[in-house]
Length: 240
Image (tube, rainbow, N blue to C red; front, side):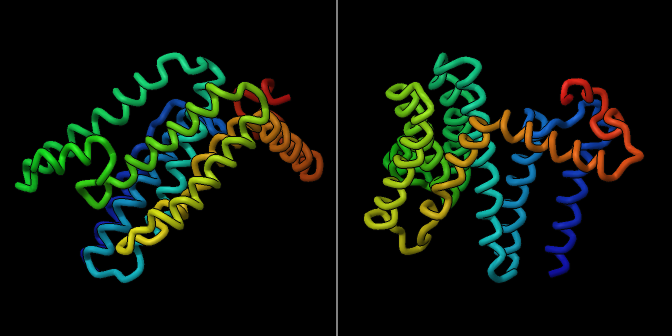
């Protein structure tokens, strides 16, 4: 337990040190904001699984929170990118930025542990059967990409959100009925809403921001004594 406590303190320390002397200001769900959330979610997964290895019972389930946060940010970022650039270079970005690093790390890891075989690596490479306990996530996120891409190609209006949620609902049913893993029950199924919720946040971003602005404006009027620049910073005019 002492080792885990020391590990927890070190994770918090190194996470917070990243904010020291940071010149950029955070805006709700901007790139810096979502990057910070992704960093927190990754550390949460590492922290929970490390605690599990050190004998802290039940803590591995907290890793699911980190996975959910990461998937929400991924769905959000993908939709924002689509709104700006469409589907231009979609698969190139996914392969170079997500798949290629994974394939490289998996290859080095399997060779280093002496667990490499051509068949095992091929199945892992093709996201058919993960070679490691964390490999399931890559297959999961690739399916998320496929659903997103397919819906955006076929549907180019607001109903795409409804169809996308429907596609994830069908995937949830199929995964829960036909692809249950006895050693990891409902591992993927319980994350089904995370990615599309991120897309929903991106599509409703302006409406949410207006609501937040109105809420803060009401707080100013009711609280008194605060100026708009004091609450909103240098970007106060942009919020008015």
